[in-house]
Length: 164
Picture 1 (cartoon, rainbow, N blue to C red):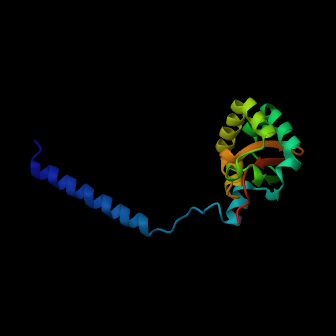
Picture 2: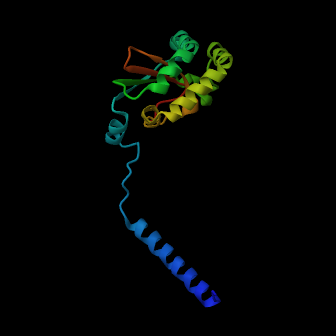
Picture 3: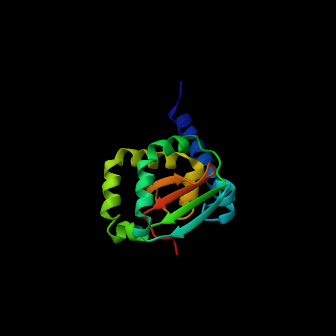
């Protein structure tokens, strides 16, 4: 038969063990590196990440073609484990702060909204690509489309401004 005193001691010992563990863990150095550290990004991504900024009007047709080809490219993203290079093309005049993409791109995004949503889910689920994008402070929801430049080079179009 268990007494109140035994339950009380068990509870106190559990509380003390929890407090000890919390203090011990707090004093340990953190092993994880943030993805803002370029060396950590290079190790995780394993490929070069380049950035370029373009005005929307000079990249409209290219983005529209990339949106139209998303279905084929999503299958590749799903299986992707290595890349030689990732290019992020910023389209700052398409950012939400600037009113969003121009009508031609916005229409194409609406037509292919399910595919664009699938792309963004696949990018979130692929550690390599997620960290490449996140390391440049691009939000997944700002990715408009992707295209492959060869087998091992990926181009990501983002309605965002480069980080300052």
